[in-house]
Image (cartoon, rainbow, N blue to C red; front, side, top):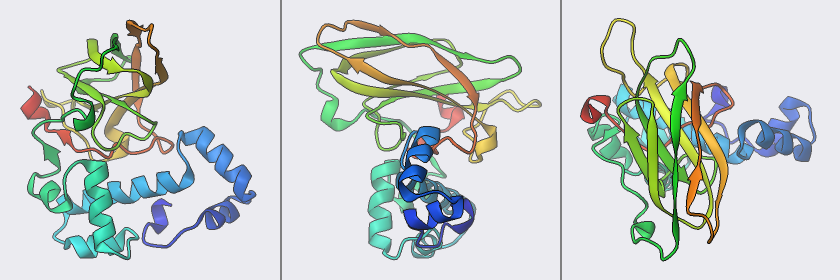
Length: 236
């Protein structure tokens, strides 16, 4: 997928390359990544578009074609839905956003809600900076989270007024550079730290749901974090 983002890849193409039947390939791919092959491909196309927007002078139309979209309108619509801002605004903001708001449809506190709380921890040798925590309706971290929090560093967190349903908690952080005092929100997968918990089921009788998260280095099986995140310096 990463080597052929501009091609019109199908599930049949992927399964044939992997030498599996289409159905078996789809099952084991989702088991490994948490999302379907088609959604994973769409996510890494948009992730590459994010990179090109802030690192090149290519037009939005050129970028949309380079990452496999025949229609710039479709590309722009999916980018805005997944990232939270338009491609033009994302470029203007330099790849960051000043704040991350909860989904507008869920800003009203539900009649029955719960609190999710716990601790974010990291393994020895890691130097996480600010940590973004977001609650999403599925395993792919895109669009606006249903609830979110930003910590200056790993530690205790609380997400209040969580509505009933099934949710997935994502934690994401950049690593502090050895010769620097601040972290950055990295563009490259190898310098990102992630952690996840889910599915988390919130029922009518749920009041407090504990959920500890351990950060680890992002790998090739992790879907990219598509929503625009805050600049580390704006968090500090």
